Length: 320
Image (cartoon, rainbow, N blue to C red; front, side, top):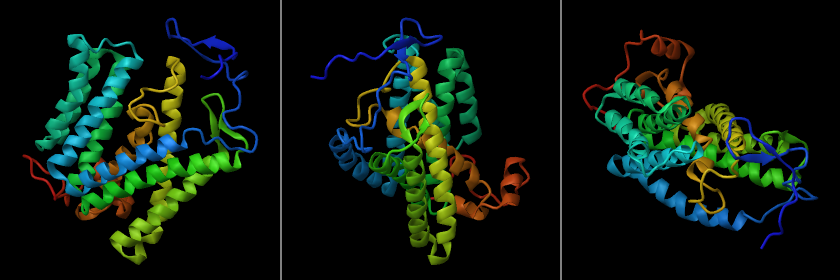
């Protein structure tokens, strides 16, 4: 059993009866030499289970993939509700958890624009809980869009998820091997600049490999650029979730994934990277992969003047 911590604690503004560690007295999360591998075994076991399941669902598409996104979205809604003290056993709590399911159902029926109206309707839960529905709902819709409405859908989703995962793993390994100056000590004391840059580099390499395999050897440059972009988005999501947890006075959003914590802890980077990739895909002609986005195509799509968008399906027609 770990010894009782003697860290000082400060009250977190806006959090009743909760506290967070004072960063000035927080012990270094990385011991001398920059190495701390105590959770590596749990991470590897979790990855050995999650990666094959996710890969199989992404490859299969259809109902298997939709169910994966639905379950993940509902699970993250559970964790977000708990962060803000929502009683999940009440009718209000049950409705909150089911809300993302309604959002995804609208999209799966081909009503993509209406699905955003459903997200907007979650404001009835109040600003804090609504923000969770916005983040989770947009990420879920983005993952569905990338798989169902772009070509080649499975490879596009694989690109995003792989770059996010490699960025996270690279940052974890390199940060603990090298250590060095902290990236954002007031938010997440364990993160270092070396880890951040290492994760960025790993994602760029992974992106170039995937693009070369999917779109030909001439596309490796696109992979480097957009792999790095996905890594930056993922790290922003990671830091944002760390800031949220610190504000709420908790270490993890949950405990469902050994070595990682909750679903929000594991997929925080994807919550930013997936919507970004989906937005970029609007500017790729012919529903192509988002790494073929053009500035003109993106501007035209955003402002509704793009006329060659067969992937903007209506009435439930999708690209397989």
